[in-house]
Amino acid sequence: MFNLFKKPNEQIQTNSAIGYGVAGGLAEAVYVALVVTFLSSAENFLPNFELNKFFAPMLMLLIFVISAGLSGLAVFGYPAYLALQKNYKNAAIAAVSALVTLVVVGLLVAVVGTLV
Image 1 (tube, rainbow, N blue to C red):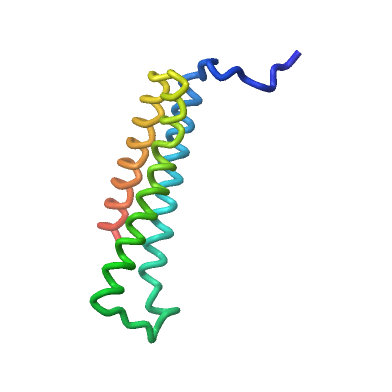
Image 2: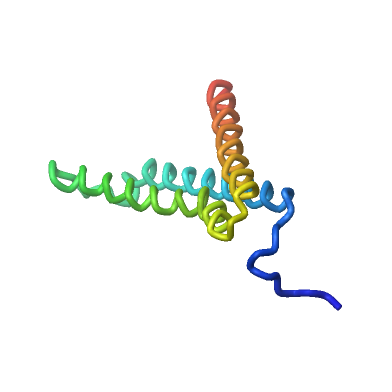
């Protein structure tokens, strides 16, 4: 019979931890691309919106705080869950694979940026 529900203490395979880490890193890269696209095109859909000395820093700090929260969830959410389940090895593997994915994406963006 198939066991569809895993027990909380059941260890996941290392390949699954790497897969979740890579998925988190790619999700973070997509999120960064969306934020950059929004900030780049904000002038087009907000042409008459002028920010003063109060609203410009406030808007940037709000975007920063929201981004930090979403980025933390994307990159460290699943590793934190694994660590709470006392699965420290796979938590570290998932976190490192997410960070390595972000470094690889960053290097690809840098190389493509120099070629364009």
